[in-house]
View 1 (cartoon, rainbow, N blue to C red):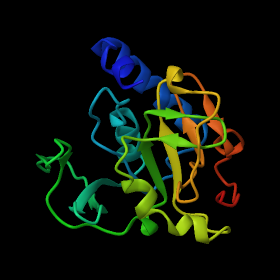
View 2 (view 1 turned 180 degrees about the vertical axis):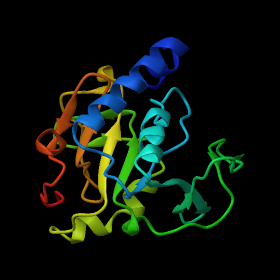
View 3 (view 1 turned 30 degrees about the vertical axis):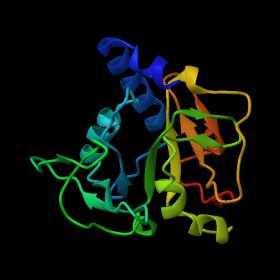
View 4 (view 1 turned 135 degrees about the horizontal axis):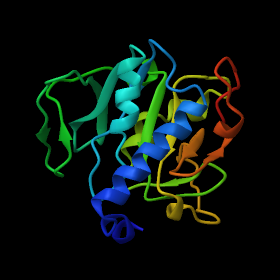
Length: 196
């Protein structure tokens, strides 16, 4: 999957990112004045930049993940403001300086995927940062925020991924041509519970 992502030409990547933003906008997301976490794409990941631009037009606060301690796999979410410089961390992921906020104060978190299935299972890059940080969602069945929505290309969907007890399921996945999982029924004023 990672190789297939990397082999996409820049034009195909840009087109897929624009279509994914359209899919998310049809769900009424991101909601105006909400706190939205995006990510800085690497390794061919679908680029959330068109979604970030939509969020800015809707007066949202934007955040990106920042790794605070590699030894303990801790991360926080630092504000992403216009003109703020980004530096590569030890894995080459660009991030702003600063500590940021805990993810529980976000409304929407866009999560990159290597692969996903229709149940909300996600295969990431293997470090487990998102699962560790959002593990509280597993303990609170009625917790509604944040909603974790994966971003992926259509070809990254597989029939079924193994899921461990510590894996935090996604609310849904938005790909370049479809919406998958619980997010398919999401309406702008809906108050459906977070899975898990």
